[in-house]
Length: 257
Image (cartoon, rainbow, N blue to C red; front, side, top):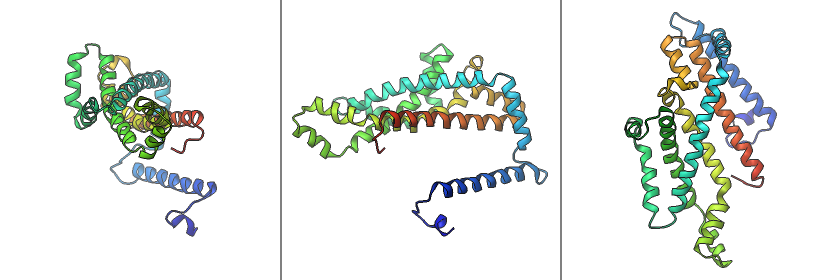
C-alpha cells in the first residue's frame, strides 16, 4: 500500500490495474452524483447517455465515424508530407527560414487561417482538409525541427568518420536514422487534427461526421447524445493513437522512443 504513494515507484501490473479501477469507479460515482444530486444537474445520467449511444447507432453512427476517420487520414497524410519537406530542408541554411516561418504559424488563430483558405478553396470538403492540414503541419513541423536540433553531435561526427558526405549524413542520420521518431511525433500531433474535428466538420454539414453530429445534438439540447458523442470521439481518438503506436513498435521493434 505504501508503494502506491511513493514517488518514482515501479509498480507491477496488478497494482496499476487496481489503481486505474479505483479511479474509474470514483469517476463513475462523481458522474452519478452530478447527474442526480440537487436541482441543477451538471451532466445527463448514465442511463440517458446509454440511450444516446443506442439512438446514435440506429441513426447510422458508423457512417459518421468512417467519414471523420477518412477526413482525418487524408489531412494527416498530406501534413506529414509537407512537414517532412520543410523539416528536412531546414537543414539547408538557404531554406531554414521556410521551416521557421511554418513553425511560427501555429500562433495564428483559426479565424485568420480559415478566412484566407476559403478564398483558395471553393469546395467545402477541400476546405475542411486544408484547415486541418495547416494546423497539423505547423505543429508537426515544429516538433520535427526540434527533433533534428536535438540529434547528438556525436552521430554527425560518427557519420563523418565513416566517410559520409553532407548529403549522405542527412540521409543516414536525420532521415533514415530518425524514422521511428517521426512515427512518434505523428502520433502525438494526431490529437491536434482529431481535436479540430468538431469545428472543421461544421463547415460541410452534408458530409456528416462526428463533429456534425455533436454540433447538431448540441443545438437540439440532447445532452445525453452530446456526452455519448464526446465519449465516442475520445475512444476513436485513443484507438487511432494505439494503432500508430502498434505500427511503430512493429516496424521498429528495437526503438527506445
